[in-house]
Length: 405
Image 1 (tube, rainbow, N blue to C red):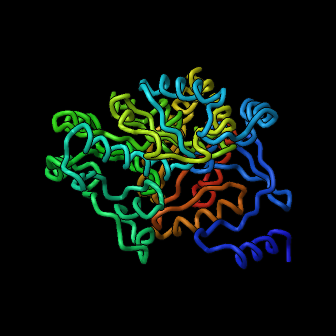
Image 2: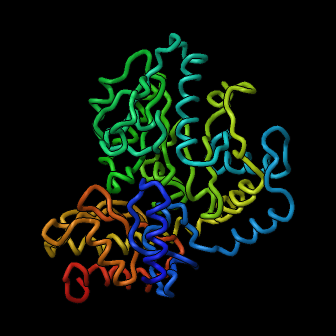
């Protein structure tokens, strides 16, 4: 038995089977490359579902973390610490907002956004107690807590976890007519991903997000944008909403905010919205801790340069041009996405998404499948163009496409 086989067998024996990982065991990583326990290198075209936008082992982020580790890592919010004010101020400025509610994971941030919207609805909008409704979209992925799966349309996420949390109306993604019909005087928020990641990198129809923004303003409803995967440079802009000139009432952030080092998430909004909280009404032991703030502050500084957004836009244009050419080969039925983010639908006769992912792994490229026939491509924004091209060549090889297309 190889070291890989042994470690996978132990993991299978002693961990809950809530994931179905590819059979690779990573032991080190740098930039866009990972190395397994056998010493084999792999090009990472997943980037931790966008948590590693700045690559593995980014020196700026590692140094920021190391410096903070030597000082103080955790105080809890029982006390102030010297990185908290800067983190909240600078993240609010990056978002064009006023206040920040820091948490840890993306799911925690979504839960916090739900609580915020409901409390705003009761205290500010005047919705009767226990009557608040939030409109969400089918095909969404906002996390896996009990409340969040209550408005999921994915059977795997929901099955056997009921009873479910009420208060949500589900409408088709991209259907403004259905959203308008779902809104009532008790609607407090619309919660959307500007691009749906887990569904296969689904980009809504042009004009949809601006129309949602206009509708929510008309109805005095909060527009909450879940930019946990799409935000912080992934699509070629700081936020995916920017592609359509939309500013939501609330951003929900996570993943890349922690630089691939520590889990950091946040809800960012106006003082009117986040000002509804009073001490004791919501909290987190680790949310906004000194280590998290130190890393996130460096992430914010890196994004301020615009370098990573520009790189994602430039390389993303190249990525989509190369992938679009595959649709003419009969091997790929559709490609979607923005920036360095793509959902690629494989024609069923060339294998499932899982089978294609495994074949790419054998060629030294790591991606992940979703929803049967789709693979997702989301490399670190620091990936070299020649490495990206090499990875695309491996995809062509798996699909039996000769040479460049």
